[in-house]
Each structure stands twice: as C-alpha cells, then as structure tokens.
Length: 99
Image 1: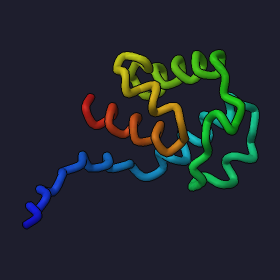
Image 2: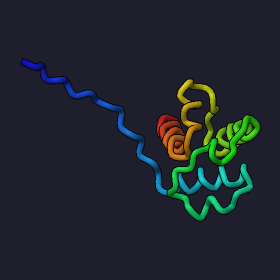
Image 3: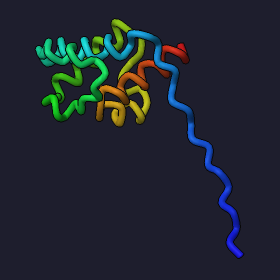
C-alpha cells in the first residue's frame, strides 16, 4: 500500500500593492532607456532578455535603496529576484511589508 504524501506548504506570494508592478517596470524602463516597456506593465519581462548587465544592476540597487529603502544584495534571495520583473516585484513587496 502506498503512503499518502503529506502536502507541502509553499510560502505564499507576497501581496503586491496596486501600482507596484507598473512602478518597477517604469524603473527598469528608465534604466534601460526603453520607454516601450511601460506600454506592457503586466508582461513578465526577463531582465537578461532586456540586456541587463552588471552596471544596470548597480543602478537598480541604488534606486531600490533610494526609492524603497532596502539594500539589494543583503540577502542571497535578492540575486534570484533579478531573473524577471515579476520576481523583482515580489521581492520589493516582501521587503516593503517587512519594513
């Protein structure tokens, strides 16, 4: 007889405040000088797909510190959040909620 697997509880995604995704998309658009990105604020762009490089990450870190009050790179999960705009939005939402 097979044992039933116990359900695994996954951490819930943070509640994203209204407008945060559009703010982060606009921030990325400004860094990459791509105003067209703001025409599709719900698209989950890949940062590498947008040509994000190390200098862009430095600029992003400075703006996140200035605008949202947290230091990018303070936690190992921060770098995983640089994969897509959606994961970055989730990170900002979690950090804002924890502050």
